[in-house]
Length: 283
Image (cartoon, rainbow, N blue to C red; front, top):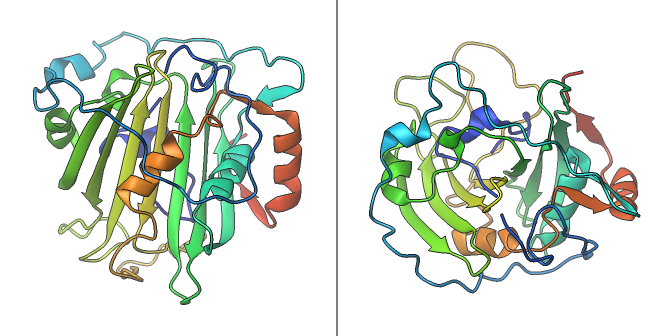
């Protein structure tokens, strides 16, 4: 999490990313449901996945030297549709947050590199429950990712994580996607990074059967935009726990609105709703 930076595929390797298959209600390539104005995120209906404690050989998560990441072209949007972008991802996330939360500090980025086709979009924002203690939430939707970002079991997630993770759960969904969620410690005792002891994220990764990855995060701290690069500068946790629980993130992740394309009307509405918006796309 961190409102001064949009999430990228690189961030996801800290403990993983998310994304799936077939049915129009859940397939990222066909989701068409317009955003609701506001709704409470409910825990997803899930069933225990088989062998969630069996680790996948770590070698599977590393691309062999010289092997390119699979390149699937971005879908051709149908009538009334456009490709998902950072601003649209922020609009959808905002619409799915529990009622009563105040959002601000919207930022996002897109990556439509001709050499790397496909959708790669993300956004961040701050959330506050009215107590004046803002924290950060973020979302990333990536179409073409390395195997390292498609971890779907807790044993492998802990092996790959750069910092300690706990409360890990892996759930197989009826559509074939796997939802991995955990608490990730954001404090680095070596002094790297902005956060201090007690800082952590609730993180969720949904890996779809078609390889798309959806990542959601909620922090218990807030990193302001353009933080100073001064040695020793840091942020402390602004509250004991993030404003979104792992169950709430799971409910948000199961929305059919997460797709590689979105209604053009939603994308247009995002331009009006998200003010001010910091476009962090590297052009």
